[in-house]
Length: 396
Picture 1 (tube, rainbow, N blue to C red):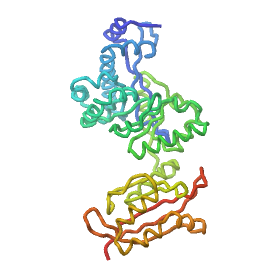
Picture 2 (picture 1 turned 60 degrees about the vertical axis):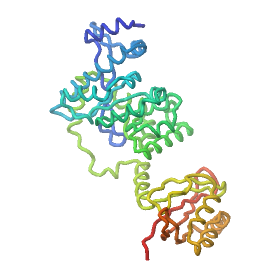
Picture 3 (picture 1 turned 135 degrees about the horizontal axis):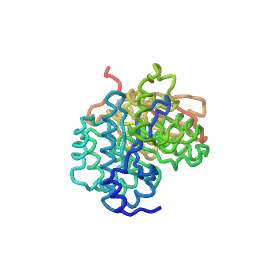
Picture 4 (picture 1 turned 90 degrees about the horizontal axis):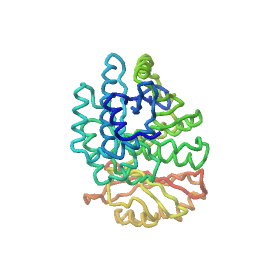
């Protein structure tokens, strides 16, 4: 079933295109939190045509931009009808062609404002592949959208050649995981490890996560365990016409939030809360593999000195740290945190090593710091692992 651009444009003009809405639910509480608008073509005889059969043709020209703006108007009209009920945020997909559109954010703001709608109710989605293809312009484009009060989501993450470096640099608010990442029903160990890593780095980048295409209870159970924020897929709800969606919104109006979220949150969520507290308490956190002589910084802010390397060889880190200590403390620091001495201490049964020294700060002033190495066991290796927590101490 193939349609020409003229046929699609005629359908658009005749109002045969409309927005369907697929709800997104909180992964833990199963309460509806938002929705995604998906375009459908409704023929005069009632036949519903999937976008699979006409969007690829539209994307070959600026016709896709006309459709995107048309869906935006549909979403605004839907949100306007929710004045007397909860207004859940709705996301809309935009083609990569909009990245080169002059004054995109201003045009979007004008449309949303014409319906007197709050900007946080509208979310802009753009695919991961579009972002990678338009790296030169994407950052300023996204910044202009977020500056206008809209959130931005990276759609279909994991469907192509994902660049974690690029995701790190993109100031997006939401990361939407493509359903292809759950192809093994979350039963494959490698698949689970990859997913856990994605959710972890998204959390550390302060990005919300949405899992798309969730169809089984097994997938949902796993996603809950690794702190996924929202779920979207046939297991929870299929794309539906506006009338059905509005009825669903009305239904969720009466559902109250649980009083004690601590009883419902996933273990991963609790761990992330704990990490936030640790990073607030200790400005310098270092993970070290003593066996392999490697380390990396997990947190580094507001510390005495900021010239420490973020990753590399542990022996060189200790040498660097020794040189920054007060002359009277250098021997003690070098001896205490000598890698071989730490390995022997672990083998002798010690759980931690602690030392207070004076370190030269970037401002040329020596300050007291407490360095504690905690030995930990790994589930994946017999290597000797240490976690270092450093704290600035008050002056005597």
